[in-house]
Image (cartoon, rainbow, N blue to C red; front, side, top):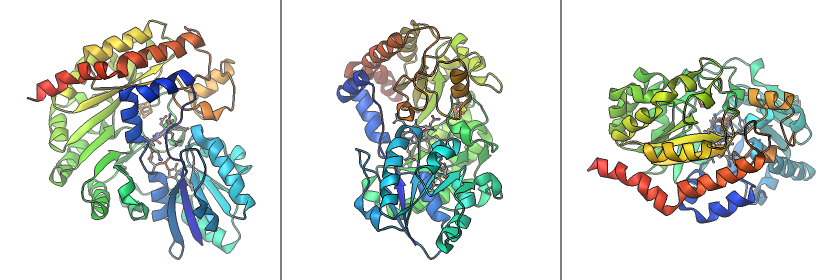
Length: 433
Ligand code: B12
Ligand code: SF4
């Protein structure tokens, strides 16, 4: 079969205020240009697990959500879904099927909404694709495939022998950053976290040699690379993290990752990360102060317990020459309208090199979604296109919807202007000299 792999590329947001700001604020533009250009690691893994004898090609949807015409020459198109653009993905799937092309859909969204997806796809995949994909491809090419493929019905994935993603399918000149995975999952359980919908699995770390092998595979295609570790929480195990950094040092590549604040507890780890050329860690701080964080992490109240030391922790990391991108969620139940100024104060006091602000988003499949639905607080159930992290689709508890929207816009203006960026970043550069 000729199999097309289709990623729904780019970022999505609908709030007109924020969109207008996004077009003019340098900080917003900077990050969206960087992240908007990442290829889909999930599809590159699927390609690596495709049985031999099939022809594979990787595609990305256009910025307006339309599909490349080459897809119509495929026998099967595999689409990876996130909630924000699943409507666009369904529209493409409908058009392809009308033209006689079979469609397979997988990824985070359809894993929790398989019945919905069955209305648009021939085959729907739940969970990690590597487990079911080889058997599914054999059955599809033999013409006797079932429609639902649940990874739970297949043996667990052996993370120690994970295949190298098929980076060779990419037009490498098109990308400035490449995703590599070092771990899967996260030991914590934040009630809003959409990654958790995949987490029937424990937190898993890959052997360091496998990670290095993936980076070498990218470097065979392109000499100078910047790597984004597509993890949820890389440095949970500090000793393993040190091993990873020691192996990265000789490669001399720059990299970015997402991790929790505990990374700041270990000076040796931070020093090794710096030597290994870590450029930035993205950390979910979520809210300044303990009160608003109470109970949002369901397992050990991790985020609330740590919050009083977050300011110092950020400084310890940045003192090592590693920038922190501190992420805050606006509209948490215990936040009141003074939250916008509190976030600005925290960002300026640290000072945080980068700040990401998002609106509390009830993603399908999360405990948050179930709770807000029960409480009648979802404004329009099923409006998955609003799952962008920037659009409000629920009724906040301690502020009005307008206060949340306007507060978000006010904060964006104060955080992302050229002047604000310079003011927060200058001390970081000064400390390096
Ligand atoms: C890297 C990343 C990005 C990158 C690259 C995305 C991409 N093209 O893959 C960028 C920066 C572009 C991005 C953008 C966005 N992201 Co993002 N991103 C991530 C992150 C950190 C890692 C994704 C990753 O590479 N995972 C590793 C791979 C191996 O896993 P995977 O993609 O899930 O694929 C596996 C399975 O899902 C399955 N599978 C996937 N697709 C398919 C298809 C088929 C046919 C089959 C059989 C199986 C299958 O098999 C794969 C292998 O096991 C995740 C967090 C997370 N844990 O997922 C957030 C995450 C996916 N992002 C999220 C969001 C909200 C966004 C944005 C909507 C933000 C915005 N406002 O625009 C955009 C929208 C993207 C889009 N076009 O719709 C949410 C999605 C929640 C949801 N339910 O939709 C997540 C979960 C973050 C979070 N915790 O909230 N993101
Ligand atoms: S710490 Fe981050 S990745 Fe882990 S559950 Fe919470 S939000 Fe998700």
